[in-house]
Length: 592
Ligand SMILES: [Zn+2]
Image (cartoon, rainbow, N blue to C red; front, side, top):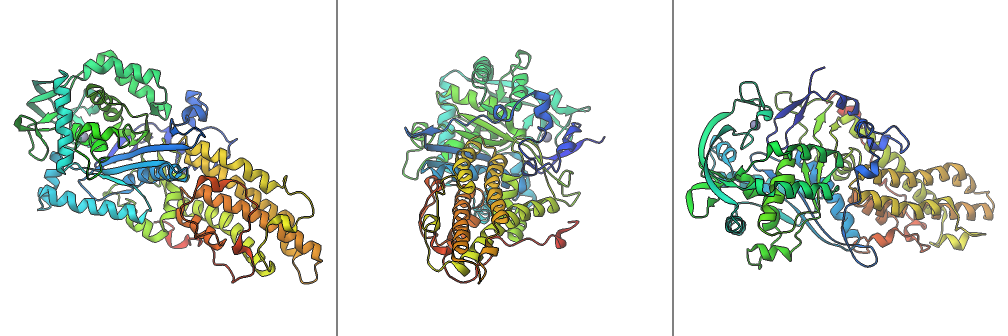
């Protein structure tokens, strides 16, 4: 079987993989899989349960267990082209966790941004008759526009060209130098401009061709500055061994531990003489700081507030260390080995978790310009709205594994969950209650007995803890499963009780009261679903709460996922409701 090609987040090019088993996972949607379904293939092969694969993230909590602080980062995207769906994906997932933490009232630092230096950017800019700065400035605008379209609320946009960032890089360099961790030596190696890196044997095909870029590497000799990675080798391995949740999903740990075998022990080059588009090495203008040494520090410099001094110490009071770095699996080595070593050298705390996501394919194939099947995020969100896109990428693709996009799967999943299950439930509740309920009241006002053990109430009491647990495992599809289990209980109750049959003109008063009471119970369940879903589908959640007459209550809070007997004003006599989620017509998208 031919290898499956995957999209590289950094350069839009593909890499081949002969792991044919992945085909079995294509089109696999976590939401379509019940909790009792067969585990994914890699769960079988590793014999891991899901909770072990997605352990609870270590988030800072207050005494009551509420999340107190979250610093979460996406990769800093390489600024040599417009944002693509591979950039949108981690940004959406990170935004879900950030919004979840905000529901708890947490102090959230959500960092996304760009990696703006390096030879490849200088080359691309030259090809487009722009200066590198002009090019990265215009790409920064494109990213900001995409985040705004996607309702991604990142509050820090990291850039590596501002002076403040450069000051942080120089201070880091100095700290490492003072610690005896930087030295100069001649280096000869096979350099790939696409990767901006010297490649190891296992990263090249025969003839010294880069496996990722399928292009010949250049044999280069440079006198470079090196970072004494070897000095931290054992400490990093020990850290990973002692903290099994440092690299997530846990299945990726073994790859890192293989890299950390003693045979591979080496230092790494942290300067380049071959380009001038970068930050000059302190005290040596003939070289610039290597893009990775430079870019990783964007996680720190972007945390600074405008009036802060541009120092590493200042960063410590602004949210560092990060709880979560969300990254693509292609940049694991930099984040799991190089970055912790740099931080150790500089005496700075390490991030808590490095969460890797898989690559995206389209209809089971690599995305690429040559195939003409690249999914562009801006038209996607303009056609379908942010909630649909967020729900599919965060809620339907198993994080950590490769995921496939096809218009058909996307539209079917979104229609099925958001329009048919949740949308219809809300619409039926509103239509029936507004037509028949004269004055808003609590279900208790209509009940003849206790409602404590009503199935919708019991399911609503169970759901929040379950949903929270999965959000905090960054297992968003499982969180969605738990929400839609509650939606399902509401829908089941609707078909069992058939309130419309008891709300006919000639129905008895008792029947009418009972039917309305049932609708109010279902509405409370749906209200809770809206809050639980709000990290993923913020606009839909707002729309539901607006229709319920609960819109003007400021920021949502996790406490609103508790069962309440309060009156839901929007259920009483009023205009016919508009659908909270418009079904997407699949027809025009078939075969696209
Ligand atoms: Zn390459």
